[in-house]
Length: 157
Length: 140
Image 1 (tube, each protein chain N blue to C red):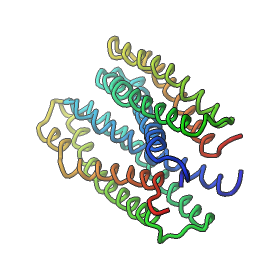
Image 2 (cartoon, rainbow over the protein chains, first blue to last red; image 1 turned 90 degrees about the vertical axis):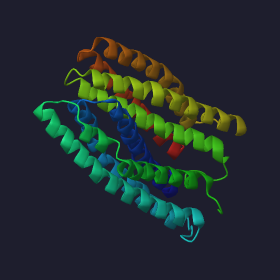
Image 3 (cartoon, rainbow over the protein chains, first blue to last red; image 1 turned 135 degrees about the vertical axis):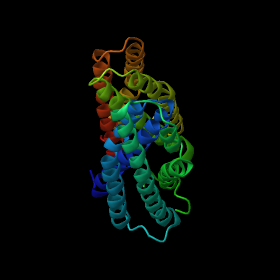
């Protein structure tokens, strides 16, 4: 395989880990809403926490090998689809990071309630449906998928 | 940087479908591994829903995108296509079997069935990883 093919293979591997992990977290974030018992909610949120590090590694791989491909293939950072992808990558990372902190507070409350009496709680339910936290997380996922759209469509290339 | 000179929509459906499939199967795998440690109806229900509502529809989108690209590019040949076809088409059988097992887990509970669900979904994730490496590197 050529250098470009190797770089592309690692770039796509990073994309699968990054986007696949984001989908995984999104699926669990939707499924957790169907639960009332704090122990069940905590179990789902702990699984989301387990994929945070792989998502981070995937996002770094996709960026690093993407930048290497720009250099290897003599592409221009001024091309819309490249700079817009980098901006969207930054947005996805920032929104995901802020949304993740809010989710951590929800998980900690769920674990406390599960250890106490495991009774359904209105406060926990409200935190799970927090519109700001959900908007941040879904915004992060949307930005990540828009990067995929730009990578495949390449407007202006 | 995935591909130049290819029609956008079928490629997007194929790649996005594959990524959603990977994420949904990964969610089912994590839920099943957690369910294999403690009997939990909530984890069983979530694993079944992840497979039924996310993974199977994603497989349909992913496979339809692949068929669309193939029809436009004159049925390309190569090891990477063969690997993709085996994982894609064979994966449906595995996906249906594991969904049946997840249904059994939801109905009967316990920690034995989720071990099967966890093992088979993990094997499928590994196969999907091999397929994306083959497709990305265009293994000949």
